[in-house]
Image (cartoon, rainbow, N blue to C red; front, side, top):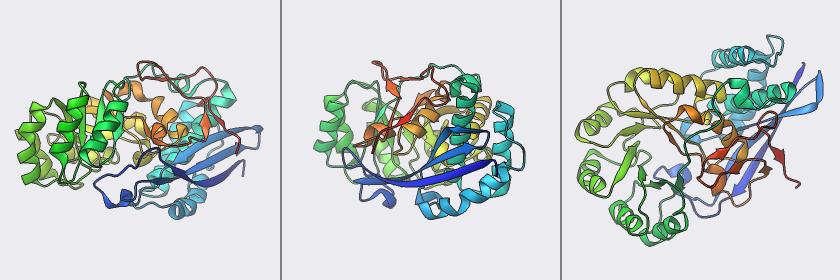
Length: 351
């Protein structure tokens, strides 16, 4: 095989406890992600780095990723490797046809392929994709905790142009009121499937009064009637996250919600995210580019396509106590600075 792949499971600590309404994040002190290194026999001195975040909510674990990676790579190698955008598109199509789901595994290989192609051509990934390098600024996300704790974290993050506040618990309103007392910018609310119609309906007037900018995934995944019910009653845009995994989900969401949240780890990497963002915009959806609690590898890959999004939530590496990678820089206005270095422009810190 001309391509060879090595993967590594990383357990990383978080700066602050980070809990969301879904139970798979209940502990909130550590996260698990998978880093891959991809080499080509013709360029043994170059390594493409990728990352996939296995989320049990989408049926993925480090073990399922380890099982899927070899089959995906075998499929990719059905066509001789070329460091071109068209070849990368074909590789994504092959992976999509090899196995359904497994977005994180596909994402890890896709990012590594883009990084390797950029390194071979000596161009940044965003130049390879022919997309603008400047994107909207990222917000900063704060997990569920006591209202006073969330407010203190909001005060510390007050230099971000927007805050994303995780909700889905009994103290949501008190939390948002406490945040508003210390932060004057836009607040984005993310319930991560944690609300009912009764909860959402009772909170909606207060959310408007508090100046909330959007509501993300208030109800369980694919609860289309509930999502449409709330959007009909809301002047705030409802954004689908858990309900929007790949482009296949757009049909059911059209006319139901105002926006969709695209994440590389859900849809399968840079190429699928680029296509999903473009298709969503063409269909009239407002676009949100999100992330998991990932290292700079996945965040840099996401930042390469962030110019196609209206809202950006690319702060996963900022939530980590120790990001293992260097090279991704945040500007003073909280926009990710895409370097002119080849590929993603990242290097692994010494152990």
